[in-house]
Each structure stands twice: as structure tokens, then as C-alpha cells.
Image (tube, rainbow, N blue to C red):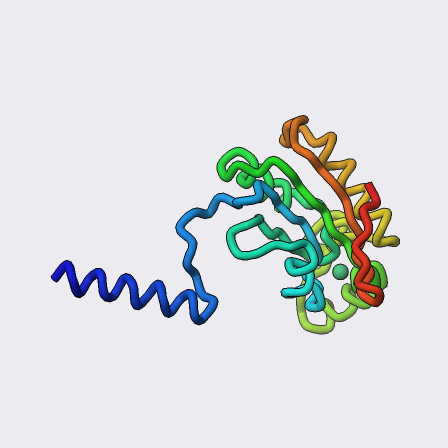
Amino acid sequence: MIKSTLKIFFYTRYFNVLSGGYTLKSAKPKKKLAIVTCMDTRLVNFLPKKLGIEQGDAKLIQNAGNIITEDVIRSLVVSIYLLGVEKITVVGHTDCGMAAANFEDVRNKMVERGANPNFTPDFEAWLGRMTCEKRNVIEGVELLKTHPAIPKDIVVEGYIIDLESEVLERII
Ligand SMILES: [Zn+2]
């Protein structure tokens, strides 16, 4: 019985390693790092590789335009107070769809499909108004550095990745 259980354990572990599947036991990030970035499809695999991040290293929090929303703050609070995060890195990118988004167009499409765009008092702010990718990162970092829920000993840095040159630049 013990022998066969052990066998299953080792086979499962071996299979997971081979398939690149789940093998880690702890949810605590080894690098004590949380990364806030955009949901842009071009960042999938590319950004973690660029940052030298592997499975188990960091918390990855993504949304449209890497905007520091209340939900991002909520995830960061859990990351800091329960999971040992000591550093937050905000990473924006060039050619972000949110910087070019036409909110009126979104509003019209919502109406066309029967949704009510008046469900929130400030639709544009809710969707994530952004005019410049760099400015957005700087404002996000400043917000985190002064947010009452984020302790002052947390290191907060901001970067921009150029999707064409693939250069990652620290901007704050
Ligand atoms: Zn983006």
C-alpha cells in the first residue's frame, strides 16, 4: 500500500516536471515580489522571461492597462501581509491598447448589445482612463507609495517595456 502510494507520488511528480505542470507546494513568492502589469497578450511568457521570473518566484497581477485599481490594491494587500511580498514592480508597455481605447466606442457597443453603460457614476474612470503609458506607470507607483494600505517599507518601482526593441526601462 505504502509502496504503491509512493509510486503514484513519484510518477505524478515526474510527470509534472516533464509537462511543466504544477510542482510547487508554497504559494509564497520566492523572490518576495509582486508584478503589476497589463493583460496584453504579447506579454504572456515574454515578460516573465524578460524579468527572469519563473514559476514560484512572484505574484503576477494583470489587468487592462496595468491600472492600480482597488482590486489590484486588494491583491497586493494579500501578497504583502499574507504571502511575504516586499517589493512591487509596475510594468507598462508601449503600444498599449488602453492608451488608444475609444471609450465612447465601448459605450456605444455596450448599448448596442443591451448592456447599460450608466451602471457606474464615472464610466471612463472605471474603465481606466489613460493617455500615456509612461505617465500611467508613474501615477501608479506614486499611488502605491502613498496608499494607506501599503506599508512604507515596501519597495515600489516602475518600468516600461518597449515591445518593438524589447528594451525594459526603469522610469521611476
Ligand atoms: Zn496594455
